[in-house]
Length: 362
Ligand SMILES: Nc1ncnc2c1ncn2[C@@H]1O[C@H](COP(=O)(O)OP(=O)(O)OP(=O)(O)O)[C@@H](O)[C@H]1O
Ligand SMILES: N[C@@H](CCO)C(=O)O
Image (cartoon, rainbow, N blue to C red; front, side):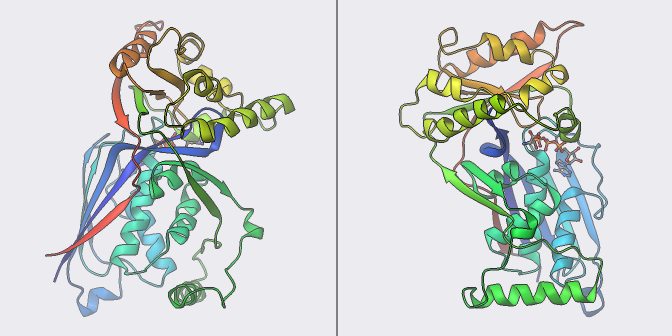
């Protein structure tokens, strides 16, 4: 008997201005992974099974379809190996349909990692808790903002614990499945010393309220900006007043978005940032002008505007006039020197549901 697993993971926008590496919003744009796993036969069960990958969507042709290199299957194989399973349980056909543009600040890598963890959990019948899934995600995507929002959905705050302060829930408090899961991982690590098991409970998250009136407009420049490059632009230390500036805004933002009737100027000011955007300006032509010219008085419907994740996408939160706001931001990109910056845009919902996996027997 074969089983089909259908996994959907939302795009995410991280930071939302002041919440660098902390805040994430999940958006109605999806990565879909369908994996059909054939019946295992005795010889294949113990070894890595054949995996084929077909991909359609963003950057088709630019991604590796080799199971050990592709981010989705590489993540799934890692999680399976940590649990003592060498490869998928049978020959597997993976079909990826991706609407999340790559390297644009909409959490494509986070979504791929989350999909890989859910895939391993499903095909390996691992029974991972959401908390343990997040630990696995964080071994690959080292900041929690995108992966936490993609995993649980909504407007999500997250933090990491210093690895040496993470730890197991005492055995007496862990349920039977959790104890078995830990024993299984430890057996796998003992059998293969090269396996790097995630520490326990390294990421923690909280879902915050977000008014259903708020929608997200993503203005997506037609060039990629690798997160690694955008992170390399950041300084190693910050002035106290800049850190305080962000903390003040972040504290207000966590509640301001959840109010039933959003207060435009409160949100607009709460989405300002001095920790990452100022240092990334030179990587995104038009960003300084967009951040300094649009505001709730001159742009009806606008609540706030920021760089989405590491960029180059611009995220505007709004309650109305979505297409007009997009047009205004796109006009700034169009007016950049040397022919302007080509963009597309999406008006998206902030979705309350995170990643899902449905199994169907074929
Ligand atoms: N569906 C996918 N399948 C395989 N690899 C992917 C997939 N999506 C993203 N990736 C990998 O992740 C890279 C992009 O990751 P990167 O962190 O630079 O940008 P991002 O995640 O889109 O942006 P941000 O983290 O700012 O939101 C791609 O170049 C590719 O290597
Ligand atoms: N917080 C991350 C999000 C991108 O993955 C950054 O801004 O670099």
